[in-house]
Length: 423
Image (tube, rainbow, N blue to C red; front, side):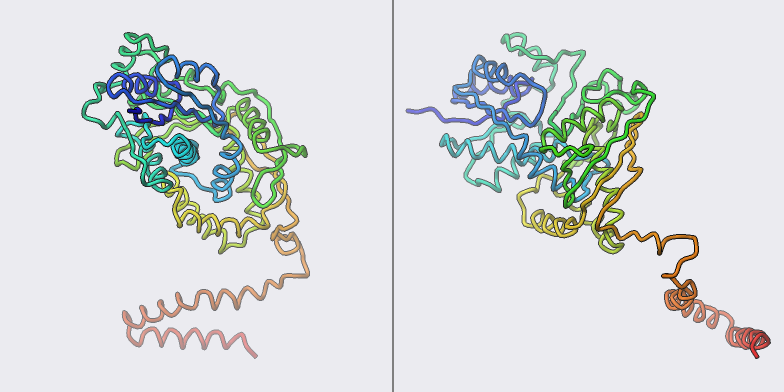
């Protein structure tokens, strides 16, 4: 009788390596390891070999970088979505990875997908919600939530790895849980679990600490078409090349590292250090360009929509009608978000210092403090009278209620005094 197949979301790291061995030893499944190349700096051939040596019957690596950028990062960027200042690097990748796992499960006729997410994290929700949305027949194996799972800490898993001769990079001194892709890298665990500990400079992987960045300004021009970045310093680039270039510039200038305590979906607070060098530049640049182009009401409402989009993405609800509807709204707002932004990069700061667009609503003739022929300042008086009319009526009612006829007497005196100035 054929063994059951399990598709394991495999990174080659501590958790998934231990899970691979544990599933083989305890359930005798045929495990197929699937690693998604989302831009993390890894030797994927070595990861495949490690999976096979640890017990996988097959190891598959998928290059999802371009799809990740165009179908997940760019829509999130256009929405201006961030969750408590976190630019959603892990959150964006999970639904795409889940989609790929489902596709391989269907191709391999496997009914199980396993992952290494803990029962305390957000990723378990993101993976499983996406899998359920795409193929409700697939069953989930989440060892960290299983009663028979023998490990309660990463220290125990490290000891098991040593015992089983599983090669790992973690140690009890360097025990961070990290997630990296072309957009960011996150760091959790270790000394970060005490919020009184300042994170060490040695934690940095993608970007220099701002204090160690060069003491000189870097300028970079970014061209956008319909809200999507398409060129750097006038050179047209594909999405992978463009984001890689901006990551290099951001890294050199110490851009995009945040140390935050966030509110997890599962109800607890957690601390994370996130490095997002190129993404931080793009967020600031696109927001600066949008200031020129969107009218006030659309701009204000879009901020509300962006917050909703961030909640949806953070909470693992990418494959939902609401997310699709919000993306449709955002695409309409971005039709004219085309132009160029000059960014100033200096010691951790990314500032939009100049911007231009053929669709700009900014008109110097109207905005100038010098003499102009297009704006009659006397028109503002009538506007202010009408704008403040509800406030004036409320004040009259209040004075009338408090002073009785006093208000009317005062009004008559004001009218009489005003008549002195009228011929």
